[in-house]
Image (cartoon, rainbow, N blue to C red):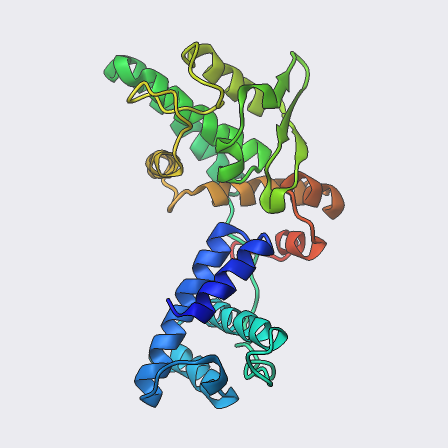
Amino acid sequence: MIPELQAFEKYMHQQERAVLTVRGYLADLGQFMLWFEQTNGETFSLPAVTPTDVREYRQYLTTLQRRKPATVNRHLAAISALMTWAKRTGQIEHNPAEEVRGVPHVEHGPRSLDKREQYALQRAIEKDLQLSRIRYPRRWRTHQRDASLAIFLLHTGLRLSEALSLRLDDFQITERKGLVTVRQGKGGKSRSVPLNTEARKALQAWLEVRPEGGGTFLWIGLENETSEALSGRSVQRALLRLGQSAGLERLTPHVLRHSFAKNLVDAKVGLEKVAALLGHSNLNTTRIYVTPNQRD
């Protein structure tokens, strides 16, 4: 990685950009730098990039690579962010990406589960628990944990990283209500999210089988008896398995988060409240759930 890109990475971390955003920008910029050197036959440097380079790269991604408009625009956003930073720090005089427009396309809302698919997932989870009691008695607790977490994510809208960072003293449950406190949300912000009946039932079912003395994290690994926080990869595998049982295409934590938000919007909950529950600092981010998705 060239020194300029290392400095830009450090700047993004200082701006508290999400880890995945930083990682995505660096990957996209790496591809642009490789294309630049192969196309122009010269070593990449910030002052060497021209508006023509950015336009030609957009054309390359669109026609030769046949990338989707959203993907092309993501690459352009990474280049624009790098060049804006370079101009601000005096490394270049003019931003070559400033006047290069993105690829126009019709925005669709994010993929989410409709009511029928949510019913199918709930039914698949119940069947999985019933069968695991009989077929996998030694691993039944693992199946209960995965089932509880899937329902918990669907009914709280938490990001996977937020859910896996929860500790035992971050939630309160009574017979009629519950509340979970996210202490380290995106951008380091904290928020409180109420627990509806389904989320409370799922959480209580997990707590009944969670090993005592299993550390301070709420969701823990069980296979190695280490009492460590559950890994994101384990959750993703579990959701894929449950999704396949329900006949769903690639069930992910983010699909469950989107489904939670879409349920609120469809129920006419105000955008300000939805944004607060999701931990969005900008209402424009929340507006994507008002945009019709492909199914709508």
